[in-house]
Length: 86
Image (cartoon, rainbow, N blue to C red):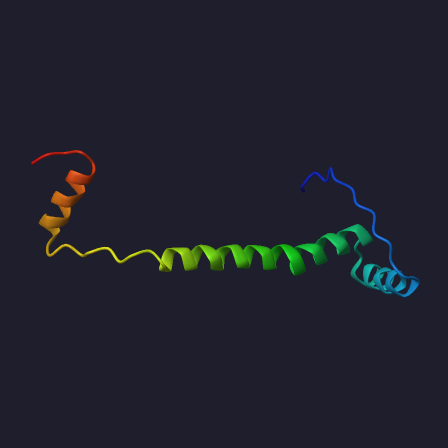
């Protein structure tokens, strides 16, 4: 279980609080757990998806790499790239 070390204060309306209490009671979960789950599901997963999409876009925007004509040619190119000489 993660160690929680940061605290925030959130003010809710009476209606919001009662609704969360009901959900908490039915699901046998603490209110804090419900709030953390909501943050994770709604905000943090969306942030992670956006970061992955941006990384994929950057990869797809790279210029194409020429394909060697043969395996032997690939090995030569790889050797030159790593400082090995024929």
